[in-house]
Length: 289
Ligand code: ZN
Ligand code: FE
View 1 (tube, rainbow, N blue to C red):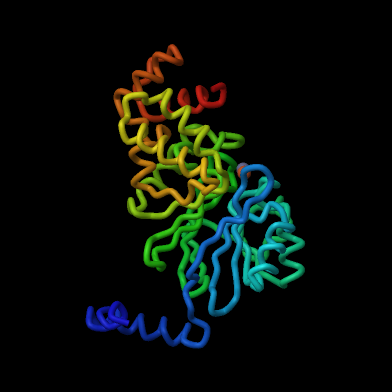
View 2 (spheres, rainbow, N blue to C red; view 1 turned 135 degrees about the horizontal axis):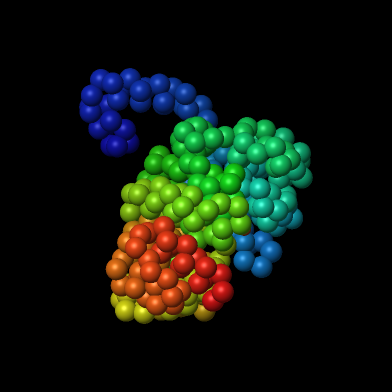
């Protein structure tokens, strides 16, 4: 592969690492080559990372075992592992049944409330999956145990962020403070703009309606609203999104924007002089929208 060849040429250190990497994965190495959304409940997506050659999948946040089993059977795949982002039942409800049936390891937050986690994770942990290396990011706010999975190993970086960052929105603050959530969102939005964002809910159109109320003059947002509506009209998921698009159109990532801040201040009747107070008022506005 030309990319591999250039890695060898790059410098001795990288070459050594690379030889090690290839050695480690030579027997089993095939990158997951397909990511498929398995719809669950009314608006959840259970993302399946699929290694076609190995006929194996890994699923993220299986809130329900039934649609996952149906998918695995119809695609003739076995389950290699499960990733969990936070403790909510619509993300964890199917994990025990699935992990028992396939003897699959379950990676997730270090939270004893989640029954069935075999590999508890925290900030900075790395895990190898289908030859890709995933970093664990702690992103409290929606819940306190919330983590996200980020990998730069596929052709395009990918982020599995559960209910923290949504397309044109963010998760409700059930457990964390606005300050915590803003720090978490900043962590995600500082990832490379081309990073594909796999959120867990199809909330995009409702989020865009709110975003347009918050930023009616944002041209990128108007364009996006049209495009996403067309996708939904055709029954196509609006996800994955990407960080660049979110930075341009997601009001929760734009709390430094002066126009947005003035609009939120007018709505909340508060004087908002920083990103945290703007974020808090914006989130509250959305909760009652
Ligand atoms: Zn949740
Ligand atoms: Fe959820």
